[in-house]
Image (cartoon, rainbow over all chains, first blue to last red; front, side, top):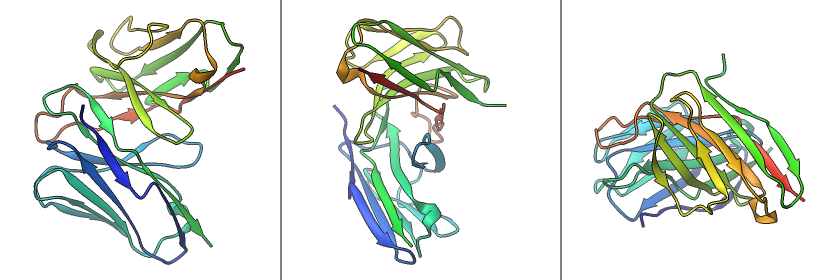
Length: 111
Length: 118
């Protein structure tokens, strides 16, 4: 079945450093969404990418959708302690009703 | 108003018991889901319902039985609880069941139910 892997699984950074998580799907995605889950919280939608090669920015966050629509990345510039949490990519299984989440990247930011 | 609400937030119970988790959404969405999140934070889809009809059942033991009395509610009943069922269970909803159209809908999550089986 379709798998969506994210690397790294964990990342510790010093406050002010940059951070990137990569999302790789075994099959082509029609679109991809990114979510953030704070410790003890629930996943919250951040953004959606639809077009091949699309790049979107939200303040210090930059999201990219690969040309082949099988991978994506989230980059955070100058991390802050409020960025702590687990970041998930998500997408629809090809031709199915399955909404699949990536394995997640847990980010810790050290002050 | 909470868009997707689950009850209870915490559930501690003994092995062998039967328990239910309730979920309601007031977003007018057609599709609802149950996800299980384990200690490693992996989010695994369990069930998906579209307009009260089951459309996804992801190799979940038949001790888990979802019920959707109407499209705003999706409850999860678990029989004969086992230690391995301990996890956080999330209910979610989205506008429609498929992302085949380019602007596929995102999911809105409930606060989660932390189930501990002792």
